[in-house]
Image (tube, rainbow, N blue to C red):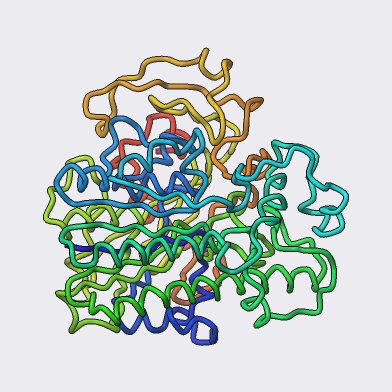
Length: 507
């Protein structure tokens, strides 16, 4: 099988016309929906970026055992399984987290990869003495920490100095590289192409022609990087941030169109599967929050887009599916596409059986952050479950790869390491059990700021998303709570959650 997998980052599905009829700026997502099957109840798993990618590659959840970190030696990796079984796999990405300490084992699972430089805080261009005073005039004060080379903001203005024309933008280069792969290999057999861009992840930096569609009344310095915080900006600043996100969505739509055009021109619809999704969504002021990490996992973050085209199901294009799925289902789907055996450790399900027709089922999705609440979705209800005391018990890390985002575990953390007996998914291999060191580096997030993972609004909640899609009315005392608790407990045990995690939630 030939497969093109398009992976965006931080794609809020409510900003896409197939999921929101009021949207009129994503014509190519409409084209895709008409050519594919759209999944309405697709959910995240482990959060945020690299934990989500570990779920996608391995087909099982990681957040119950581990924060942000590399693939582990015992993990099953679908691109590696394909690579070792004669399906060529190629990764094209501008996602710089793959090349940091906490993501360094992912890209090497593919036969080959192309890393496009320059997104966000990618340490790309060397400018020892950047023009700090000029930058301070150019950029909003909320994103102007230019003197600290470890700051999330340091490299962004430097990189932006070298991104002038549309062809220079990393996401544009990603899709150009993807089209080069297709031109070279479209007639070859058995390959898997992953085109992955950091967009529309913040900072919301898009070519000017896309920004022209979303002009606001804001006239201050460049403002395109929302804080992981409550909405505190002026109305004009809020409008500007949202407009810059929509400009980036518009760019993503344009890039998607280039792939759809190539499929049309070369009739790849006859023999090539096309899958599009994201790692997670993004808060754009809903519930008075920006971004992710700190607030509850509302559907703006948790309920994400998924489109699948398969040449064997041409008669079903344009249809929708309501089955509850999540990102751990991608791995077994890609393996079944290529007639490869699904490993026993995989908890996800192949989605191919759901392409033929709509099926009612009792599937549920478990998702969350390491050390945070545990959440469940069943298609009708979402359940946010928090322990009575979030600080009652600091969680342990279970790993053989003791690295955080951009650094090793601290010596204080490593001094607590004990050898723990194997889990059901570690293939008989014991792992290190390491205590969390709150005085150490930030963990579990991609921005590097410790405040970003101070969970807030940690109130257990249940929402009936059929009647209350905005998740505004907490019905935690409803008769559904016991059923949802039992299903959550079952899923956590199924994933071999550590005993202290089960106890932390009263199970």
